[in-house]
Length: 255
Image (cartoon, rainbow, N blue to C red; front, side, top):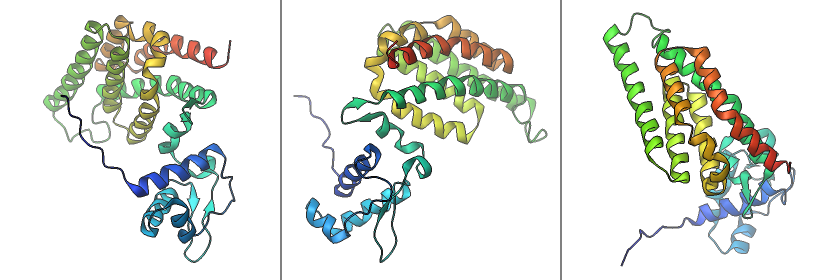
């Protein structure tokens, strides 16, 4: 008998998800007002503290505006929300939103080469902002750590024949590239894009197989990054990402 851990459900989390889904789907339009905490608690069959906590989370996500003693107003998430809503926008009601998927793919194609370029630039000058703070030995250790991480991901990609697992290895490869780029903005963007992308791994496997199976390109990209060749890294990354991205966008567009 295989036992699985029991997942504890959060009441406030359930309230958050229900209202967030209505905001992101447009069922609750910008400018609409929510019922009072008491009314929401009664309608949902939960406590007022649970509703209050959910509303605070919604406000932090940029989905509603909560004012003490005033009505809670729905905001335009396109103006105030962050990337954390992206996974919820991608799949709504069990259906993939083609426009959101296209946007994710376009961001992937634009950001991938830039992240690779930046990672290679960091390898060329690992401490460019503090040129006297690190010894040559430490710089070499940084480069060796990046080389080992990228190599391990490429070898895992080369030896695994499962198309879904290959995508996971490819994401791990890019995770290390983002680490090497040492940019908190790219890191947070990557985290959200990955969270949005992972639920679709099985569906995307047929189209992504050519990309994740192109082990030679991953090796070339890793070599360019470790050697500190930014332009080559950017060009190699674009050549790697563009075919599958173009094909996926064509599918989403119905072409």
